[in-house]
Image 1 (cartoon, rainbow, N blue to C red):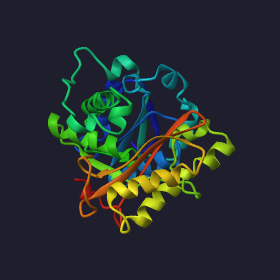
Image 2 (image 1 turned 30 degrees about the horizontal axis):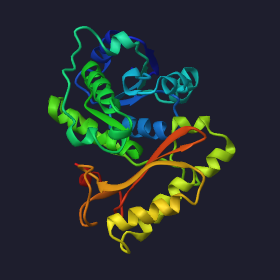
Image 3 (image 1 turned 90 degrees about the vertical axis):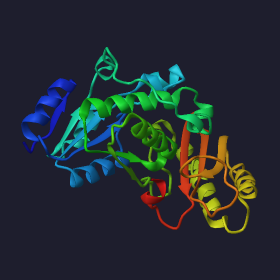
Image 4 (image 1 turned 180 degrees about the vertical axis):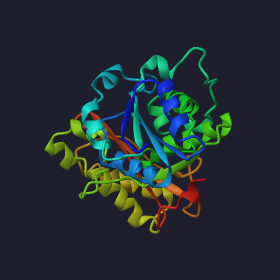
Length: 289
């Protein structure tokens, strides 16, 4: 059935999939809405690689450790629908909280270990357990063949991989390159809350990441980290963290022979922004597996 559809109930969505796409490849793109070109790039890829694509829009309260951040998160459902109605093999599911977290809840919890203790895990306690919970349930309730995620949230991708392995859901996970503005800023729903001056100031993030990329042969990881922090502080943003870690385990590295990533989180106009750069010549998903 080649037509755009919207669902607010997993049961109706399941009935639709069973009727028209039984036995065919189903792709899933989980989002929290406020869609932008980065999200659309995931949907475009998923629509080419699958017979049918489900885009979920659900602002997950379990992954916010700041209530004001949750309440102020942009919600643009009508605009999101308009962006997606160009696809004939895509459906949106906009579930309510009790649908995502039914009773009994299928999620039994997983031990995320080190991933839940460093970088985002350290500065946003409980965040990754919330991510793990919601993504598990979305996988469970939609039963896709594959799921697509942007690698701007690279540590989150590692968390989802671990959850997927531990729970035995065995969904194929596709990590997709970060989509950026022409100036280099990583596209994010949070960018909508920045002023034009804030958008300009936030470019220190990508400038710092490029500094790291260009100088990784000149310094040890620790020295390069310190140099990068000095470089970043020439701008006006408030740094939360900047670190260079193993791109698989997110543990500290001693040299650049292992796959590594520089991750950064900073505040611009009280808006929290994150970004990263893989310290490889090309983005290679095999190195993240």
